[in-house]
Length: 508
Image (cartoon, rainbow, N blue to C red; front, side, top):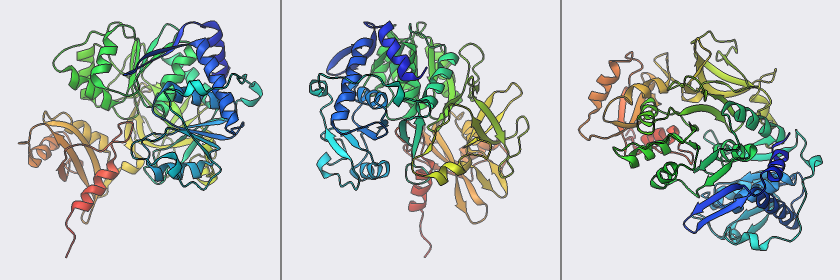
């Protein structure tokens, strides 16, 4: 049963039950399952009035809100392709995405930070740009609704397009079908034991696979309730977590760091919580251990991508090993192959992670070449991530293939160096990358946010060499005030290297 069919049944079965409780500075608005379905179908009728038809792309660039959620679900339900966009995008970024997607409709606010008004968008596409006020949007909905037409929602029909981060070039649209979305939700529902009794605290962005599919779709598919905050604020999240009306919490490592910092020396009793998960970036071992000590929970780490949804997860019942991302979800095939040859790796040997199964995306929008290169001839998706599998079948990530450092002919995996440096008491955060070097090819370089200004480069190099071979230890340590991160908190290593190059003196 497809996700939207399941949602429709949940609206019938759980009618008056709260589906979404949206908490903001304006107050709290609760939407029952039956009211949510009515608003989604009315919103679908409104989109049809704006010119959207089945198969069209519908872009939504709004602050996190009930209106944004309903527009996304409405686009999917009418057979259109939903494109949630980051409201922080600048005008040039929006123009590129609209021209690339050829969206039929863009629903946006009157103005966002960093943007000109909608009328200033110079778009060479058939996009109709409609500006709305999320707070009052529901008043503009027509009396008519659009019923769910299963004929428009075939398993292979496109449902969603999420743009990748664009760290290796301009963003690409990853197109997902109703079938692939549903497959991933079913896998996670089984692995994480979702139930209608759960209450999710939702603090993630809605334009990313983590917040939209893993969190929101997961809750709605299970018939659970979602307490939604418009943004993450550590003290507010701690208060929500402590009120005993939430059972599930999903966050990224940066959020957990901020929760721990806001907690100070205190502990927070979270015995009522059933599940805390972390994703979208590596959770440092020291953060994992601090969460266990201060919250009384061992976080469930998992691994996924925009193109695949979630593939691996530590178990809800069973060992959760810090630094590992668990085992394949039910129905997911995973393998590790040697770079260049594609031959299977031995146990404990590092290679590229590849995956196959019904959870995979359909391909990159208007880019058959990139799509073809991303798959092997027998249908395995090349993740571009390095990892290994231990004797118990559990996976551990070693970073992106593009992050691999080759120094003096030796391979160095940045995560191994980061694990060591993070144990130093003065290292608050660190990122390791390869920087071009005339002698070594690439020099292992550590970018460090330190807690004690007296900590020296020499001290950190000596510290790392006590646990690492000399060729793995940093050749250079650069102290920075903060690590640049994207919207999901992932460290942008290319920006660190580029900034360092820009600051380096040029030869005379």
